Image 1 (tube, rainbow, N blue to C red):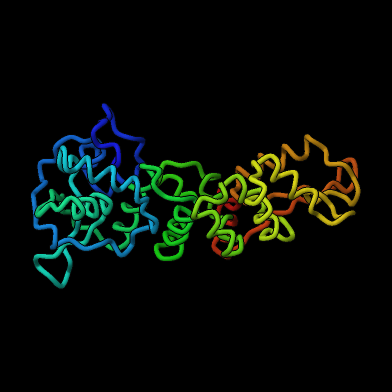
Image 2: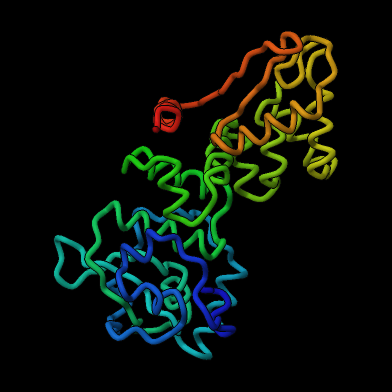
Length: 298
C-alpha cells in the first residue's frame, strides 16, 4: 500500500492475528488509510531506521513513485514508531521506513506518526508482518525474518503461520530456502531466480552450477525441475524409492501431502507391497523440536 497510497482500499488487507493483538484497536485503522486519532506530526530528523527491518532491498523506481505521490498528496498513512529509550525526543521506525525515506527525498520537514510502546520482539513482529502483508519482501528476506522470529523470540512454525496469516507449509517452504548455498540465496534475493526455481534446486547435487545454467538459458520452473532430475547420478534412487524403480505417482502425491502437512521433506521408501519406511528430513534442532511437539500432541 505504500507505493499505491492513492488507490486506497475499502477494507483492510488480511492481517495476521498477531498484528491486531500487538497494535490493539488501532490496527484496523492503521491497516486501512483511515485517519488515526493518535497520529501527530514530528520533525523528520527525529526519526531513525528500524534496526529490525526485515527488508534490505528498496526498489529505487518504486521509491521514486512514492516520492511523487507524497509531493502531490502528502503522507496518507502515518509512520508507526516507538520512542527511543535513551532519548526523550527520538523515535525508532516500526513500520513505514519507505515512507520516511521518500519523505526525505520529497524534502518534507515533518511527517505524521503513530507512537506505540512495543518491546523488541513485538517491534520485529510488526515490522515483518507489515512488510509481508504488502508483499514487499523477497522470499529470502521473508525467510530470514521468520528465522529471526524463531531464533530470537522462540516462535514455532505453527505460531508464525498464525501470526502472519500464512499457511504453515508456506512458512516451512520459505525456511527451507535458507538451506541453499549463499550464492543461490543472493540470486534469489536479487530476482535472478524465483522461489519456484529455488525449491527445485534444494535437493540438487550441484545447485550452484544448475542455477547458473538456469539464469544463462532463462529456464522456467518446469524446465528447472526437469534439469534437476536429469542431473542426478545414474542409478540414484529418485525421491527415496528403491534403486532403479519408477516412482509411483500415488506415493509421490502422498509424499507431497505429508510434506505440506508437517512442513518438512517427507520421503516414503516402499520395500514390499505392504512394508516400507517413512523418513522426515529436518535442517535445524528447532524444526525437530517443533515436529516432536506436533507428533506428541494429544
